[in-house]
Length: 456
Image (tube, rainbow, N blue to C red; front, top):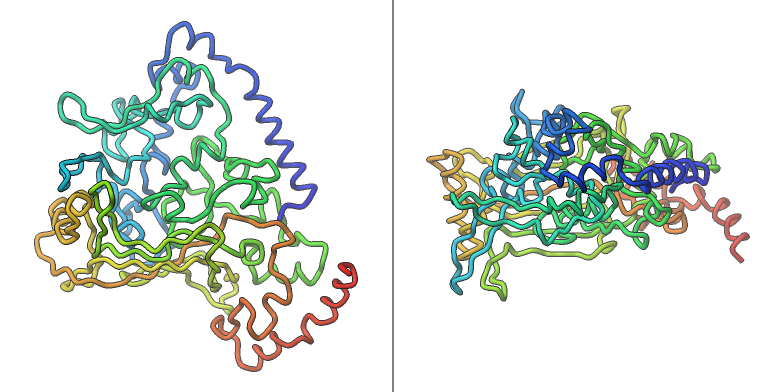
């Protein structure tokens, strides 16, 4: 939880930035006079920014990754090309396309890259003048962006593209990106609202939002590059890492010395993010027919704050195998801390010949429910000629880094240091003798008794 001084400092920056944007954009008169012609209009005052943006994760959906096992050296990884069971597809096999007609004769457009901030006239990760011209600057920077104008459709040549709101009104009303701006894409990732992450960035569920902060107050962007943390499942990054103990917090954020000693081995998130939500499991081998005649993979969904995390040592390196993606670390490596994670389990098809996870093109099963047709289509796109699909499960650990609760809901001594507490010390590598000591009232009794005197 933010201290008062930290809150004041960050809010000061946020308010100062808001004041700056509250004034009319210096280029407003130019835009009103000349209209808006996409990025080239922005580049009149911001030269080189379109090219700069094409080198970022938000455009490429991939980056070099140096903390994950079993990756090919020199290859960039991310939503563009990863195969894992939260999505079981990627931008390559699930390129924006028109779904074949279902049994009701209906069709629609779909694809993993529908959130890509371009018009899709060039592939994800493309560069050059055409790619730069296709960038949707206003989707993040306009305060009056009409999202109803951003929708897929076909051009005369049959290419499926995403239309944009390039209206003069949208371009003339620029402002600071809000949480809503970010969550248009990030909240609906993984197949629907609150499916992948299960967090809702609003004052009710996050103390930072309640204190007036937006996403970019923590993820402070520089040259279109976003700082990110070390979620074991979130590989692509702009090369800028962030943590709680940055500009807002320190390694000793508490007035209580006992609590500050905990920070040497326990991450801030462990005590301050006590719940998460979203899908806990998916089955891509069995699709379910919806009322509209289209099919969706079977999914076990959970609401915001419904899921208790599991705790594990994490040193910011990741085990990556076909059956498991999760944190590496131990209590003895000198680098790890205990972090909270949401466990997700996904069922999909593996290649019996290689043991690797097979990708799936969602277009065929979305229209007919035939999951193996989706595997066959993806194999054709990827040039895989020989494979034997067999169903199997993959376990993924998602980092819990949002939904920071108020101080009153943080874990306390009696949440962790009791025999039936939330922390499984034995699973974390502690001996029977250590577990007995850590779960004895001797550890916390006097402190809790004293704190109760203030409550009654």
